[in-house]
Amino acid sequence: MAAQTAAAQPRQSVLRNPWVQLVTGIVCMAMVANLQYGWTVFVEPINASTGWKISAIQVSFAIFVLVETWLVPFEAALVDR
Image (cartoon, rainbow, N blue to C red; front, side):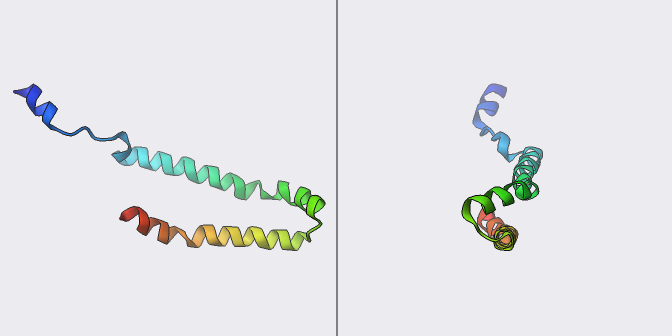
């Protein structure tokens, strides 16, 4: 009887565990944050290879950060579906 009950219950995915979701989210945010913190390393090579002004390069990075940040509520609504 116990074997039939265990077989009848659906297996839960590891990804449904809230602790796994939390750790996965932290790892993903750390990967994105590295791009933000390491951005200054790429400013001079971009300037040297393209000839763009440093201010223009920094504005493009600021736009990236703003878009990345302000899209989060829409991403969350998509995930909730």
